[in-house]
Image (cartoon, protein in one colour):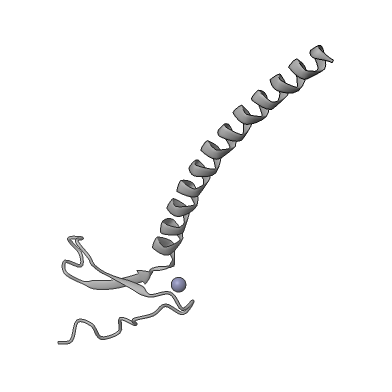
Length: 80
Ligand SMILES: [Zn+2]
C-alpha cells in the first residue's frame, strides 16, 4: 500500500503541502496533509516582526537625534 497516494505535493492554492501522520486512536499512523501556506505566513510574520523591531529601534535613535537638534536650535535662539 502506497501511503503517499492521494497526498498532493502542492495545495490547490499553489503552496507546498505539509504531510502529517495522525496520532489519534481512531486513525493511528494515517497520513494526511494540510496546506503549507499557513507556515509560510507564520515565517513571513516572524520576519516582519523582526523588521518592525529594527525599525522601532531606529525610530528611537531618530527621536533622540531630533531632541538633540531641538536643544541645539533653542541654544542658538537664546544666543541670538
Ligand atoms: Zn493552500
